Image (tube, rainbow, N blue to C red; front, side):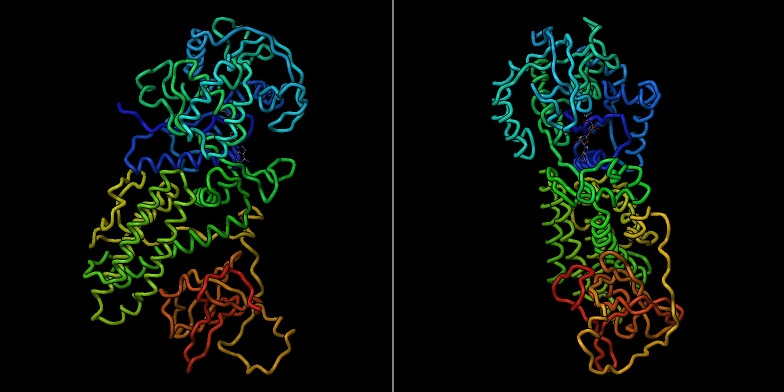
Length: 640
Ligand code: MSP
C-alpha cells in the first residue's frame, strides 16, 4: 500500500458533551479529508477520545459512575455526533482500548531503550483541568487560569532537555511544521528559552495505563493520549497499516494544546525513532456572542443544540467560511443566519432553483443541447476554469474560507450571466430557442462545477444539486475529472426540483428553533388603493420605514394578471410581499434583485394572499419599474 494522506483531530476529553469548539476542529478535518479525496488521494482521517486521567476519574465520581461507564457514555456521544453531522472518519481510537494500551507500552519501550526515560521525583502545582503542572511558583494554571493543587510524587521522566537542539534544527528545516507561522514563531521562542525534562508517569491516581515495568505508575495522560495518533492506525499491532499512514500529514489542534503537539510530541517521536508529523495546523478559538463560552454564562453551544436547530451544511458552512483557520471567531446566531440565508439560500440555492425551473419550464426538464458559444459564454467558461484552479490552490494551502469565497465569486458570476442573457426573454421568441438552450446549459454546467467544488464542505447540498441535475453520482466519490468543464450530459432528465437550503429564521433560532413566529394581525385592503401624496414634513417622512431587501423567491398568484408573491430577505428576516408587477417582470428574473421595501405598512391581504410590506417602484406609463441599487448594499439598510 502506498502512503495515505493521514490527518487527525485531537482526541477529545470525554468528561462532557461535544460543543461548538469540538465541532469546529472536526468539521475542518472532514472538509480537508474530503477535498483530498476529491483530488484523488487516498486518505485516512482519524478522530477519537482521550479517556484516561484524573480529570475523567473525578468527573466520573461526581456523576456517580465508574470511569468506564462515563467514558463509554461520552465516547458514544462523540461518535454519534460526528455521524449526525455527516463527518466521515476512517479510524476512531478510544484510549481505553486494548490496542492502544499495547501501543503505549511499545512506544515507551522504544524510548526507554534509547535511554530517554529515567526515574525521578516530581513536585509542583498541578492543574487537574489541563492535566499539566504549572511553572514553578505559579498557583494558577497558565493555560486556563484555574487554581492549581500541590502534588508530590515519584515519577518517570522523559529527557526533553536532550532534544532542544534537535527540535530547533527540525523547526529550521521545516519552517511550516506549525501553521500558521505566528504559532511556529511562538514555539521556536519557547524552545529557545530552554527545555526541562517532563514527567510522564503518575502514582496519584489509577485511571490510566500502567507502566509495564513498574505498574505502580500510570502513564501521564498526555503521553498516553498523544500515542493515540499512532495506535489508531496500527502502531504496535499492525505495522504494515501503520507504515502506510505515518508520518501524519496534518494534525489539527486548537491553540491551547500547541505546546504538547509542537514540542513534546515531535521529541517523543524522535526519541522512539519515528518521524514527526508533517504539519500541525492550529485553529483559533470561538467565543459565543462576544464572550468566552461557559456553562455558567449560559452561552454554551453544544453540538446537540446546533444539530437540533440547523442542517449540518449550515453549521459547517458558517464555521468554515466565517474565519480563516488559525484566527479566532465569534459565534452569533445573527451572523450565522445572515451568512446562511444570503450565501446558501439566496446566492447558491436560488441560482440552482431558478435555473432548473427554467429548464423544467422551457425544455420539459431535459438538459438542453447547446449551440455556438458567444463572447459572454466564453467568459463564463473561462472564469469557471480559473475559479476551479484558484479554489484548488487555496484549499491545498488549507485556506478553506478563501476557497469558499472564490467559489462564491463564480456563483455571483453565474447569477450575473443569467441577468445579462435574460433567458426568460429569450423564451418568448421561438427563433431564439437555440440561444436559450446554450444559456441554460452553461448556467447548469456552472452550477454542477460549483456543487463539485463545495462538496467537501457541503456534501448534502452538493448531493441535492447533483440529484436535481439528474446526475446519479455520489458526491463523496467525485474526482478531478468532475472539476472539468463540460461534463454535464445534454439530454439528461432533471430530478425533482426543490429548495437546496431552507431559509433560517433568527427569532425562531434564538427562541429554540422549534415554534413558528406568531402571525401579525391581517387586515383586508383593496388592491392598488393609494392616495395622491400632499406635501409632508420630514417627521412624516420619518414615519415611513424603507429598507433594502433582496428578492429570494417569486411566483405568480393564481388568477391574477398583475400580482406576484415575493419572498424578500431583509437581512434578519424574510417577508412575504405581494407586488403588482407581474405584467412587467417574469418571476424567474427577480431572485437576487435588490429592492426597496416599505417595511412598516400594516399587513394586507391581496387576492387572498398576505402581504407584509410594499415594494417601491416607479410608475412609467402604467408600467412598474422597480427601484434598485447599482452597488451592493447590506440587506436591511434603512433608506433615509
Ligand atoms: N484531550 C485533549 C487533546 C489530546 S490530543 C492527543 C484535549 N481535549 S479537549 O476536548 O479539551 O479539546 C479538544 C479540542 O477542542 C482542542 O483542540 C481545543 O482547542 C478545542 N476547543 C475547545 N474549546 C474550543 C473553543 N471554544 N473554540 C475552538 N476550539 C476549542 O484538549
